Amino acid sequence: MKKSIWLVAIISIVMLSLIGLTAGCQKKEDIGGLTDEQIKAAKKGDLQATHDFKYTGGMWSESKLPPKEAKRIKKEIEEGFKKALDIWINTKDNPKDFEKGLAGKALWELKQQTAAEQAQGKIKIRVHDKREFEVVKIKEDAGAVAYTYVDNSYYIDAKTKKKISKPTGDKKEWLIGIGKYGKVWKISEIVPLRPKTPTDKEHKSQ
Figure 1 (cartoon, rainbow, N blue to C red):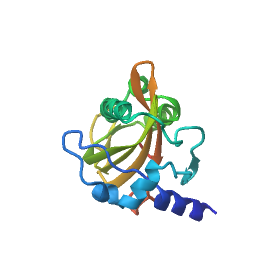
Figure 2 (figure 1 turned 180 degrees about the horizontal axis):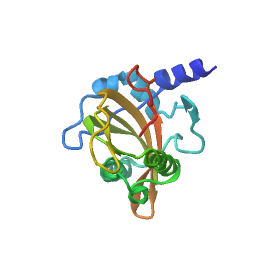
Figure 3 (figure 1 turned 90 degrees about the vertical axis):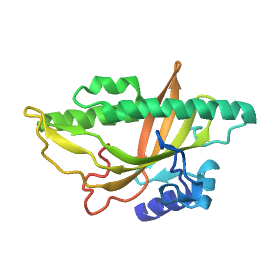
Figure 4 (figure 1 turned 180 degrees about the vertical axis):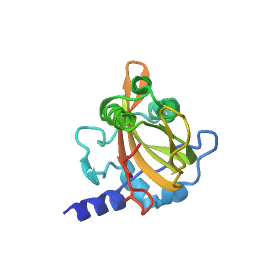
């Protein structure tokens, strides 16, 4: 059952794309190893589940926004995602800083992860290389972003600040839920879109 859900998640969706925070986007067919057909499926809201997390509610329902309005909101989401992503990456030993760019499930998970790491006396230094992203779903106050990168993150000792682990160089693919909280777009959900690799023992580590 889990296997079939996983296959549906990978084959029937996704959205991997947006970022090149500093670089332009690639063709959709090339982003995150996904086919154009998969991305089209994601845009139709065909995502039902990814691994062990189900999406419910209206996030995946078709948006009836006029083209101009959709374009404006997409631009907002792109800019909001870049800012939220910077906060996600640059927050190290103060979990409260995540609140500036994250909310909901994503905020809770990252706070829990950081607390667990601190209890072990280590701090995660996030390094996301070769970033790509694409907005794949748009609503008035919410959206979904496909995000892929090469993970060169590592840990340092909380006291000595010395490096205590090496980057794996694994390719990470995430489906990011983003919502508008007041006037600020924040990442609200972070879901893995590919199985963990042999070197990625904690694929869910964000």
